[in-house]
Image (cartoon, rainbow, N blue to C red):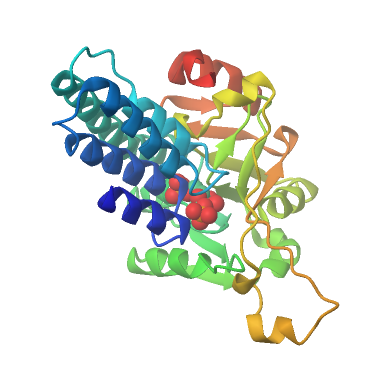
Length: 306
Ligand SMILES: O=P(O)(O)OC[C@H]1O[C@H](OP(=O)(O)O)[C@H](O)[C@@H]1O
């Protein structure tokens, strides 16, 4: 399980990050691990597969892309290990190919909502959101981007590099400048870690502040999310867990040790209620958040809820 553990550790430490990327990495790691078990009897194979699935899913709790990818990859009806590995390999190939194609389709669909002259605010680093922005730019639209720093991990610095390399005029702001800057913005485009059945968006901490400031300024909020970012288990009443990360990401441990009356809270995500979201752009179309149940039922399958 060495390679699988390495991938799990990279996801935990955020060496591999972004809800889509962790899903693709987990699917590939599970496939490779299953292939390494070909000499086992089926019953033992299935036990080891479940253990590996749990190791991957337990790395980060919020992005539902991870358990969805693992569930879609590991399922098989085989009666021997060779057929099981074959099914799992095909599942992984399908998931990984679809994930890549979904990003392109989201770009094409979402770009329709972007007009010449638009100033777009984005938060953190979302490959799906950037696909929309880059596609609109590639279509010749004269656009610019305002990107938040996204403390504490500062994924905004990845975003500005990516936009710079694509030739897109970009302004970096600190997170606390979101409301002040909103008057310069035409629309907000963000990614998703999870979308619950009531249409609420769970995304990088601070996303809800962008959404509130956008609503106050009457600006649209567009969410870019592959269908596998919708959470089937929220159908059963399960809440999406918000990941709390280490205080080391916020303040130096030595400084904190000198401050015995201070504690640090570092939630990595927040919840934006559906009423702040205008449209969710998926690879199968643009939906209002109120259609989250339909997306889960028709494109993920209710069996993923159990
Ligand atoms: O899948 P894509 O669109 O790339 O990213 C979706 C979301 O995943 C990221 O989480 P983190 O940085 O891994 O905690 C951000 O919250 C981003 O908006």
